[in-house]
Image (cartoon, rainbow, N blue to C red; front, side, top):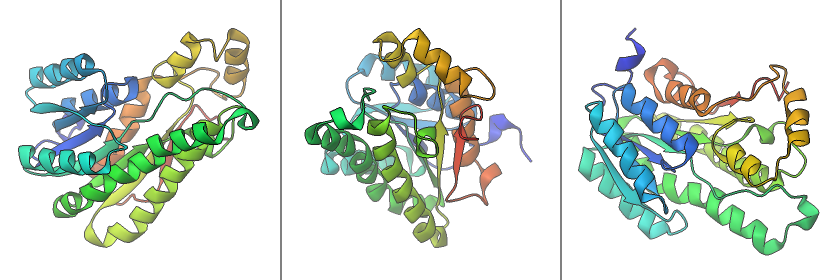
Amino acid sequence: MTGFAEDFTGRPGAAVVVGASGGLGAAIARLLAERGSDLALTYRSRAGAADELAAEAAALGRRAKTWQVDLTDAAGVAAFVDAAAEEFGGVHTVVYASGPHIPMVHLSRVSPEQFKYQMDNDAVAFFNLVHPALPHLRAAKGGIVAVTTAATRRFPVRDGLSSAPKGAVEQVAWGLAAEEGRFGVRVNCVGPGMLTDGMAAELIGNGDLDERALDVARGNIPLRRFGVARDIAEAVCFLASDRANFITGQKLDVDGGYGV
């Protein structure tokens, strides 16, 4: 078996990383590049962050290109996927690491309009991405890894705007795993728990999670600490690699034991 640094070396095409300008997406893209993959990176508004990431990949000897993509625009997403496949000669992996900011609020205080927005920008967005990617993934016998949440296993109060759309993402992933396996396509999910990077950092920064809430969260985690973006990247890259070539339709929660 090859070393980690060679996991994606020689694979035709590139890994598509959607949400690459965010904390988790960037960590995943960096590790994919370290392990030999070229990158097709998307961002919605943070062009500078995506460009810096592409430059980091280039410094590692990998090809990388960025695209601005609105995942709610199905036609635009399909055009991006086809353009990425043409640019790199195929797509071997699709990583969905995107999603809108998620305020922590009781479901009774969520408006139908707010709920629809979250579903459109997460669950519908995921389908908009994977649907046009399937022909390319079949050709490559590649895979999809969706970054969801540990909250679909154990619900944290005020987290419904995250767990509901991510639960829908997971159900689509299970359906694709069941239907696309005959074409050699694998589909899995990674469920982050509390992290010091990504969305959790935003929630801490804007006061949605105060020190008392953080202490309670730590107390609910057997390891009594929070994870980091690299922890999620390791899980994603494992599931995308040939090391996991007999794993599909699964979810790996990276949560310090929160779901126990």
